Length: 231
Image (cartoon, rainbow, N blue to C red; front, side):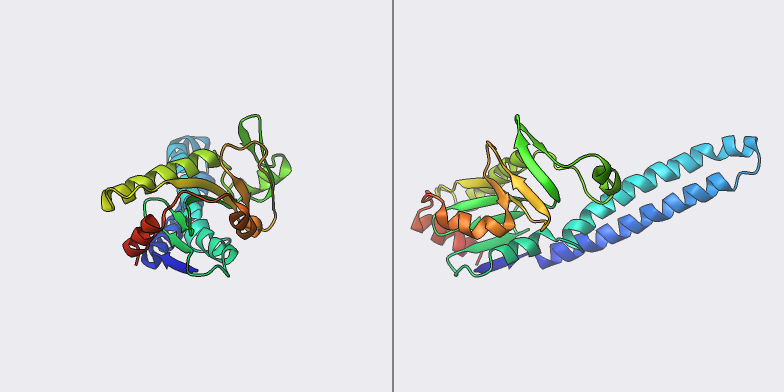
């Protein structure tokens, strides 16, 4: 399998995540110290706006920095896990990580997939039109280190549209349909996709799913044009 990856983008986002995270952590400490340094009720009231501002901004920056770090710097990195999940495919498959407006695109022999990669752990299921992730005590302990599951189907569909527009601007006259796909990469995730409008599965099942899927609509000419575009 060919892997085309924007390593400069990954490194820069990883550094940005670290800087923002530690800046936020520093603000949290400053806010706490400002609050604790008040010796009278009047001082406490006077310093409350500063302390509150530091704590709120610190929390926001810590969350934003952690978001980037989880994707580009450490842990279950989406591009790394996705590459590992597809390892063993021949050169008819091309994985493009962060090389287009869609974060992850797989060009298969007869189809193109825009992949929304999700890092959540635990039991994940699609039910009554919504994706659900574990709640309760586990959610309380992981709320700062793990974002909510959101709407993976909408994310994958949006990535599909972005990729199609990207290709249309560079290969006019070459019809490309990018199929949305959701892949969960956490080893501790259990996926029950139910009646999800977009195919969703765990990374460990991805290769088997791709081999068993119906033949796609990507023509040989279109695939060759895509390969030349990313060569």
